[in-house]
Picture: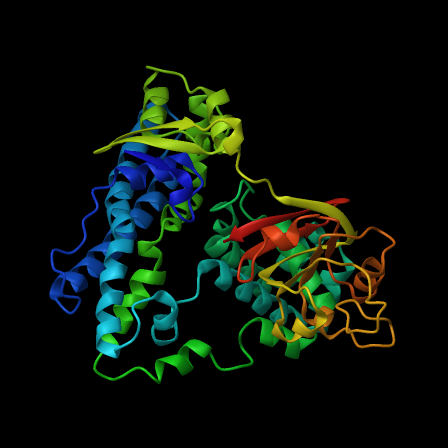
Length: 457
């Protein structure tokens, strides 16, 4: 078997990809979507995920850094992770069978888009993270003293000030980092979200929007579309609908389950990396067998090879629990983050909306990342994404950040964004061709050279 890491959505790390590739794939034994086998599959997957989470919490606390405890912790982790990975590997096949059954019951075309409105897929962790952040900003904004503290200080000092003077708010931030700190490292080479970076995003949100707008961005001010769609579902198939939702969006069935597990036990993996003679990031591109050999002293990790896997991507070879990895050649190098010039400082994350004509501005929702090509107003009198000062900048007021293909520090777009305090990166050259509607990205315009990282494709 040869498998490229790109075929495992949400997994860019060789360690986690190898676990999924080696998994035994244990789908239910029945093709009847209403059979008890599917219910058993979901229950067993949930149990396996919970056992993995219990395991990583324990090894994070008990591993003392000695070779013996690290090896024991690794073996415990591998046992639980491979069990959970069986269900992750099987989930696409199970979901396909469930969707076939649902399409038959509803007499709909058997394709994902036709079923989407009926299933009402659960919100992804990436989307939930963004809404959670806006809820924290909303909570801070309710207290004028808290809002002033956050906006008057640097991001680091603001975080420390909240901890000292507003412990309830600080607890919300700690919970957010514990629950979602891992999210952006699933598909990128970014480190997990830090308190400073989280505070930078909160500061931008408080600068930009009032309580009502923040409530919309947090998903608190309007009824859920998923709930509305569910009302149209025939009563005879609620169990089938729920099974589809669970397998499609439940963390127990997604590759990012393993990313979250590694995040929870990050203190353990830092000790493993030190013992293996590499960085924590390099360790993520080693296979379980390579790590085991490094801890046992039978072979050293080839850190140069691990760096190549991180840069060029990798292929997985083998099956039946014996999976190895090798780096791809330079021609298949993974796309780097988009870069450009930061012309209005700040950090934000949100869902991409590519708008090439100002008439499309109506599709932009509060908190979206506006991606467009031009940075100048339309001199032919047509509507513009970047209007003159005499025209309300409706689209810009909704955008959490803006990324363009063209433009520079003194362009019209740069001036408009600075006036509206919108984080903005201009001159990316390829944003409108690389980014697509619905992607979740993080825009880092806190430095002169800004970056746009794809968090969820």
